[in-house]
Image (tube, rainbow, N blue to C red; front, side, top):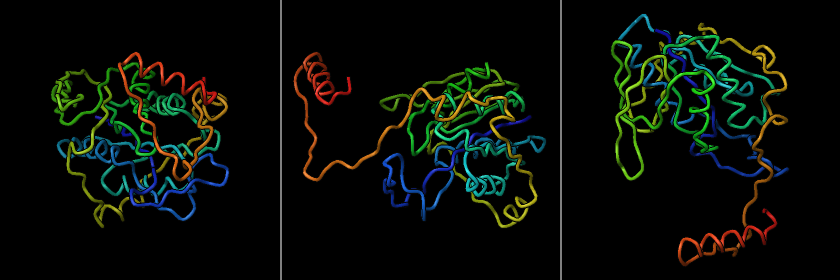
Length: 261
């Protein structure tokens, strides 16, 4: 069995986040990065399956600059077998769809029996890449998994809904599952694993290698981040009251006042 795990490198949970000079993103100099916490649980889910079947291959995939290699090595140290790193400035500024296209190109080449990904990324919180990836790969999927079992090609997933409700979904492999935090106890990379990770392969790909030149990146993105800013001191939030229709009307009016509609 082959399992593909999608991971994203995000700022460390304890990192101080300041907006960069251009106001387009955070200042990344001198801050630590780590594997997105949701993706850590996705990786653990894959490694747990590998523990039960030594013939299972776990492939981790990530997109980003050179620093992403550190997170890939961490994943390899935890027990993944090999990694694919899409390291190309042409991928910068990709929206969720662009990211899904890149991962789908790798997925179609790898032909995994299962794909795991975190429910969402700590920095973006879109929760859109997983379902888009499954759609592009043409495989069934489910999200927010808190528990799952796999047997005889069937995947039984217990997923979290709003309000604490749970839903049980049965999928047929190949399929994609996005994981919720807390679904398992994430292991640490052992010293032996860290040493072994140095010899495990990381396949570096460009956007062109994947046949996606001009199809991803900032120029192709449908959703773009225009500006980040810190509200002025003393600028409090305004609470809108009334019925649903009244609140919606007031909100639309405020949006028009700001010239956003």
